[in-house]
Amino acid sequence: MSVQSLPLAGVAATIIKEHGDELLDEWMASLAEVADLAQAGPKARPDAAEFLRLLVAGLAESAQIDLQGTEWRAMREFLVELSNRQAEWGFSPVDTAEFLMALKRPLASLMQRVGGSDGRWLESWQQVNQVIDRWALYTMEVVQANREATIRRQQQEMLELSTPVIQLWDGITAVPLIGTLDSERTQTVMESLLTSIVENHAEIAIIDITGVPTVDTLVAQHLLKTVAAARLMGAECIISGVRPTIAQTIVHLGIDIGSVATKASLADALKLAFRRRGCKVESCNQ
Amino acid sequence: MERIPILKLHDLLLVTIQVDMHDRLAMTLQDDLMHQIRRTRARGVLIDISALDLVDSFIGRLIGEIASMARVMDAETVLVGMQPAVAITLVELGLSLGGVRTALNVERGMQLLREGSPEEEASGHASIDH
Amino acid sequence: MPASTIERLQVACEEDLVRVRQRVRTMAAEIGLSLVNQTKIVTAASELARNMLKYGGGGETEFERVERNGLIGLQLTFRDSGPGIENIEMAMTDGYTTGGGMGLGLSGSKRLVNDFAIQSAPGQGTTVTVIRWK
Image (cartoon, rainbow over all chains, first blue to last red; front, side, top):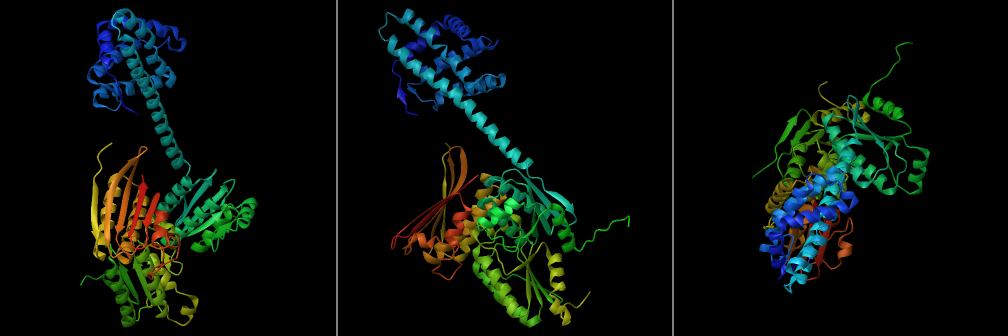
């Protein structure tokens, strides 16, 4: 963001300071005209008053529009709090920006009325106008950043939720994969499967892909890497739930799955695992 | 001179690597192991790397070479206890150590060596104590 | 943005490789990289520092914590003034080696990091810069 100088901001700052209450009344009145903000709540007036106070303080100290400057620190903190509070109340980012923008018209008429005799009022108003615009945009950025952080957190939580590793038997662990596998998710699966091999002393790990709609080259490679890593640790992987379409895809793509054991169903994989572990399953009724 | 200790357990040799080895130390280990296999007529070698948080291509290649050399001297090598993060990294690096047998821990590694191959069992070499 | 400090280590003998690995491990843990990502960057550092020692006659490693677009990462630079690489593309191929190794140093470490940049010319030395993001 470029840094612009504001040689005449002081003129506006003085006017805002001297006619603070009057300006506040008019700001609230102009706010009432914007339908969505009519219910801005009992906190609208104190919030507006705080914004004016910080604006005057910032303009008095700053000769430039530099939102990152130390003189605007209190303003930044206030607007972060305000934006997030309003977002929690259900206001959109635009509402919060409009709340600040609603100050512009009353401020223009106040400055024209009070400072009309001073030829510099128009230029000063334009400069303060820019500052208000910047802060209005800033509130939108805050909400945006907050939302992105929430989305990232939820993605992470979903990743963890969607990859349970189950201990099926002594020394046999399984991970049922459901849904589309992207690179990041496959990596998470890979890591939790390998960790569970150590934790459960599992010599056999079953990767069940019954719930995976398609397997592309990248996913197949990830699966094969998991198998290779498990082997390095001393465990054997069995891939189960390979549906005909996936088998066709794997062959058509020319993916070499080499010596990896594959089974059509989880039950078949478990049978193989039992056999490898030297376990025998018998029915009691016969 | 600094050395990695090699333990003899019946007809097996056990090496537990616990330090981040510099290259020369790793090469000394390879030499020492070969001499010990000859001297003790060991049938198997267990390399325990459960305490290692890194295996790069140099150490990886060295382990692969140990396994091949030991095989020529009629001893099987089992690599045991590789950590998940190390395994993922090695695979990504492009090293899958195809010729090396692996096991989850020392106990399982010993079992694997004792079981041996059917051919060995037939010739009565497999193990001393059961 | 917090002022970043660049740390440096000379790589002139095999023992220095151990020091590089330990320093990278500590910094990666401080930054908060996951165990897998720590292991990846330490391994990449080991490969690249060894390359530098083997082909470049030793050199210097720089460690730097970097921040970009809200991401935090660890950046490592390996700089030598050795003979340089004539054909970078070929040197980046799996299995290509002029030193009797496995030829996984450059190509393998590229797979272990997020960003990988190499600058080299015959007679001008080699500089490799890698980043692993959190």
